[in-house]
Length: 404
Image (cartoon, rainbow, N blue to C red; front, side, top):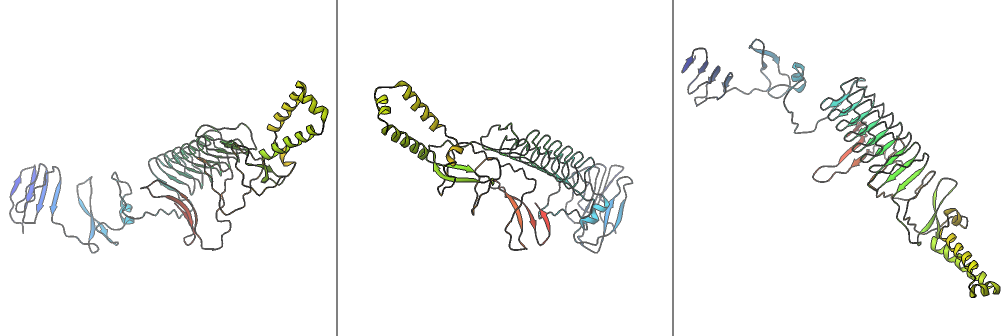
């Protein structure tokens, strides 16, 4: 039974129910017994609607015919069914989607990919690739590669490579390489290389190289550590380069680079070597009366030789010193660059690297080398300033997968 047919405005609006009214070209059905005056036009309004979570079918509006239709049963909870049921009807929306709980993205098929963001993985995205961020992995991202950040790995990112950061690995990042940081490995980062830090390995980073620190770069088979905050691009291959190194005052011990590629403390200070040489000179002078007479009489040539010897003392090489002994049990402080051509082995319980950039050439970084618990999770934590939570990438053992 229809009560209170208030108005029927020919061709413009329909208002049915007490205390109801409709705008132009609109339909209002009101069974509340209270005022219901929607302000919109060209619309259909119904009030009330009974809420039923499971027993009713879902309705839809066919925008071509204007018909309200039954689209089937709702098998899941909620007023609109499960997420799967909804996206089966159409998986595009022009609205923002807000998640108030955790979101898990799992690509289970052998051909599956994860693409999140505007224009991600658009052209020939490779198998099992991950592209997150606007234009990440946009063109020809190869299989099993990861690009996270705006335009990260955007063009021709090669297989098994990782680019994290704004424009990291932007163009032709080669296989098995890693670039972390704004513009890290941006253009033509070669295979098996690692660039960490803003603009680290910016252009043409060499194969099998490590560049760590802002504006650092390395040629092939080299390691570069740069904490200057300015560009540091050594021009040699097969080397170890560090900048800066503090200048010493002579009290620090001299280091030795051993035949088995270790950097060792010789236990000998530069100052002690100078003292020993000066003492030896004094002894020789004291034992030679003629020599002493020449000195006392102002022998300019002899004085010149002594001055030259002092200059030689001040320019002693590490090889000169370590020929006298290459071991020490003293702490060593180096005040300038330390360049090691070979392996660096550090034996201890803690290693602290206070640099702005850390470059690692090896494409595979091993964690938990002395792992005892077979169920131990392993990962990397990337610190963020409060209130932003730290970011982590880890292998979760019970789930047997890597998550970020």
